[in-house]
Length: 314
Ligand code: A2P
Image (tube, rainbow, N blue to C red; front, side, top):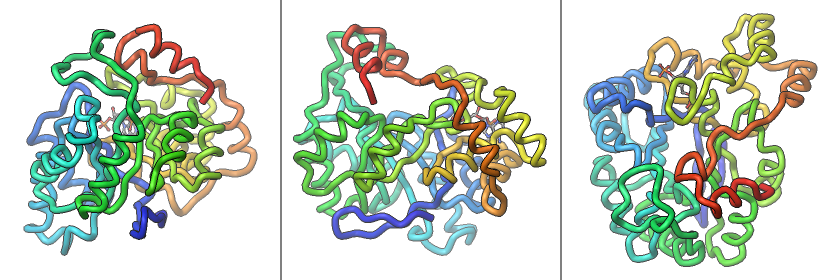
């Protein structure tokens, strides 16, 4: 795991976590069953968000794993959830994390993240969002709400997701507790070298979502798993393309939250530690053509200022 500090707390993040968002949604029972299977396979890090609607099945799976004796105590797990954009307002944040905790049947989170650096007006339930419902985030006051969650002991650490280095600069200029992590899209075809370097310099740990390119989801595509360079490296090493991608991320100092609800694939995704990429293989990967898969505009709508945000230098 990766050890990092948030305020005066020290936490350890298991390098590979299980993503719990699927598309189309896997359903409550299937999600719960997959998470129990994942705990059995050795996963100790789970990534959810109020937006995913997987907090409840995750909570039930944790309770069941404790009953079954798969884990001895909740402290063995690292659980991350995220503040949705419609609650990105200072006074709403403590009630919102309490709701997540109720859903999860937990009394604290290990990590709570701002899901996106955007604010949505409350009534929005559908994507793409109409432009009159989307606003820039008031980073300073929202972060104060996040700090309050940590100061109340509702979460051990706080961080952000989908923040560019510009957003992070703004946050760091007022934060009392610096963000412990930034969770962003990252894989060999969207390497985010500049953002990684920025985060490293500021002591912010990077966590990769869509580490496998989110194949077969409505927001992702197959290009990571179908990339010939990655496939050739996989073949030569007797590994899978998914493992090459996860190992590459690990060698960049990045944690990942691949989602798999399939027993064989979830085990495969954990099996990246007792082998390594050669320098030549790493060099080939670093030269792959780059393309961002998930943009503000593709998630929230192709509105002018979101297109501008996407075009901004990271
Ligand atoms: P499944 O749950 O059926 O395994 P990401 O983590 O980048 O969002 O990608 C998730 C997608 O990749 C899911 O569709 C998941 O499907 C699939 N997936 C996860 N692990 C693997 C793997 N080792 N090999 C192939 N596909 C995988």
